[in-house]
Length: 241
Image (tube, rainbow, N blue to C red; front, side, top):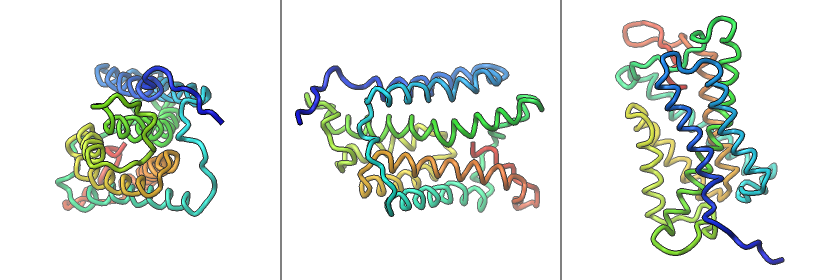
């Protein structure tokens, strides 16, 4: 069977969801009330809508082919280990925790708190993994392999290891997060990059990322205030999300 001819640059399915994701986050940060429930809903619906639309068009062939297998169990286990790497240092060392209070569902009022939590859960645990992984480990990782040539990044195999793309992608992942996250982000990135190169499947790494985020969200929701700092005061865990 003849493969369809690649046309254009192929960047739009990877860039538009990420630009929408970052743009709406920036807008929320500039508004005194964060934009309320309406903007929170847009942060989920717009990037997620872009991903869904491009997926239905067949623009993400790298997401196809995931089947129930022991490898999927590995995706889940890697995701859970990643959640432990994220959470444990901040519980063990008081100095690592940021001053920010993080997400506050009560800021949306008593009537809106449940909806706010639901939207945040969907955005953090489902939309974010797809948007970030498609941009970083599908587009960026492959583009860095060929940006100095005339080759199309779409012809680069998924999860092909090259030192240049590995190092630059790792640095991107780490330094696009807040400074207090750099240490745990570096550990999580190295873990998931190693799994990605072994797994060689985009959907597998999306699953791992989603499990990490989902596990962190569930941990915060169920364990907030149950841990204490060195002074014996309860620790608010909402800074994680």
